[in-house]
Amino acid sequence: MTGIVEAVRDGDERVLRRLLSRLAEQATAADLYALRDALSQQPQTSGPHGHER
Image (cartoon, rainbow, N blue to C red; front, side):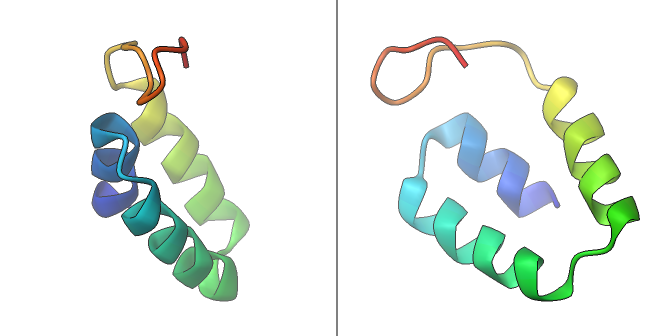
């Protein structure tokens, strides 16, 4: 999960796609809730294209 959160924060779409693909193959509902919680703890910043996330 940490890698996904870091890829979102850094705007690294290539790494994010790879990690999300891997997560999709193995994810459980608990994993999705943990990802949501981890992302909600990150400070709100602009995305890689200047759009608010």
